[in-house]
Image (cartoon, rainbow, N blue to C red):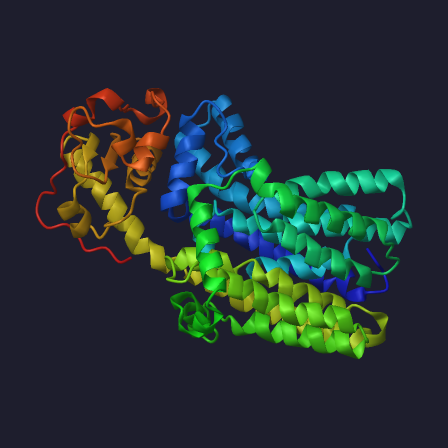
Length: 481
């Protein structure tokens, strides 16, 4: 760590630890809210049910939490414990990167920028923990921390340093399809670090360009990713409609909305651009001013009609890195002195406190939903438990229309409390002889046979027609989305 920056030796490090410890506490306290949510429930169920590793859309770098779950299952840990581990592990990974960057590689950038980037644009997405966009705010910082360490040690040109740098790039690039763009941005700003040398960032730029040109050939996109790509291509032909898009409105409405406060990254970006201009880093100022809005435009065009709030939040979330790096590196020079360091500390404290509070209070949005799912499980047990069809009238009664994750949410909830298993299938009864390709996608993607020892139930794809239909007794509680 560069000792010319006293800010890094004290407040920034303590604030970073405090933030991640707070997020770890929230991930433990609200483990059920984070687990019982659509994509998360499906993926965690797959980790427990599938003998092999379940890799979604070639995101191999996101395997660490899954590896911990499988290791815990091998040690005989109970389902409830494993679900808590799954929730905590998704915060533990970035925290370990923070600890490595600060205390091993002694990085100014990680100490200042990573905690801030982690929460700056996060709100409800904390409760969508398996979304790989989270890793865009941790893995790149490990690469940048290594570069900073190499510059400070004067080994930035050594062949072994280049080799290690390239090795660290691979998991970063594989964690998300847009990771190459963030690494390119990061490599440009690496030239502002003290003791910088060109081989590390330039080699990273070359690898990223090669990756961008060949990624879709090496790793064909999923149907989900193709939808975003198609929307983006179509949107680029009519840029004039950007102000009218639902996704644009989501961001603009959230500028001053408590919880989101998207005005904060905008303000930090402006402060960073002004600091870069004062330091006569005109090229970096121009790229900083362009990158953040460019990313938002791509986000707006790829989701023109909007998505669920938690998905829109995760799409905007990675833009924090594009605002934080210019702010930190624009003010990190000695020319700005201790007065600037004190101001940065004050800003850091304010933003971390505000955003931590917003993330904590966002849990209330999902408590009613969890209570409703728990009610479904309870009513399912009263009806005999097991696997049952959960048809449209009852989905509407419980406020779960369109929630394809219900089978996995209900099964994990019922498995976590040791009671009778319940697995609700949100569709109409499937007739005998239905072709495999006509089944709901979540039935096609499941591994058969299920782990009966863990979950207490199994599904025979050849006997789907024999599954009973759930009927709620009395009036089901309304559920807040």
